[in-house]
Image 1: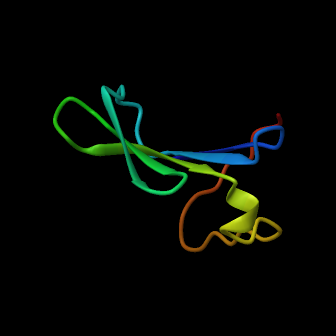
Image 2: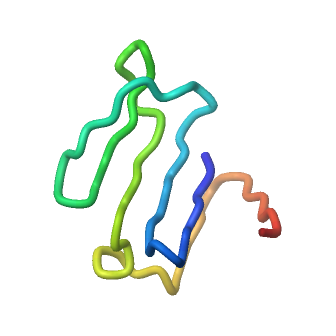
Length: 70
């Protein structure tokens, strides 16, 4: 899983899988799910994320974590 924040668009993309997205559906205003060819969710796009979630803190528990420089 990868998290990618784009400050110029205030958008967060949560990449859940390496599988390719073939379809996208907006499930709520500014929240889009991406699906693979089998119908599984492979990613989530959240527009205007700063008004929807608290970005100042990220907690990760009980899993490996690798931080990659931007």
